[in-house]
Length: 106
Image 1 (spheres, rainbow, N blue to C red):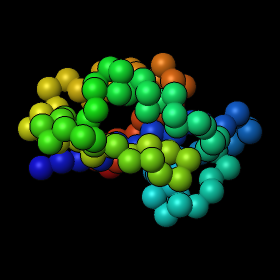
Image 2: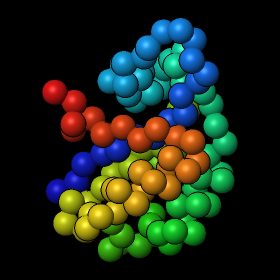
Image 3: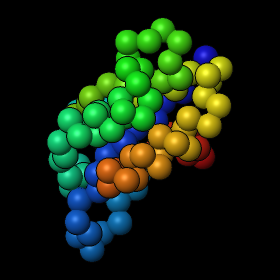
Image 4: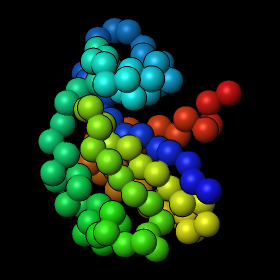
């Protein structure tokens, strides 16, 4: 069993508050959203691999990641999570990315 997380960079505040669920849906549909700023995924991927190793190449890894449209999508293995999500969120925050968990949306 697994669940997804998605990470993106918020654009500079434009005076409007964006709903994270709306941003999530736009990014999954590969649509632009005014609240999202583009970012270079290479340093983020390098930080992930430095901290967690080659997760996409390891069958026993706690998660896989995919580069999406202005975002990174993470598929987390529930059976191997063991604190990985919190460490991943801290790592992403250090890269100035917001990590959204759509499962927590009411």
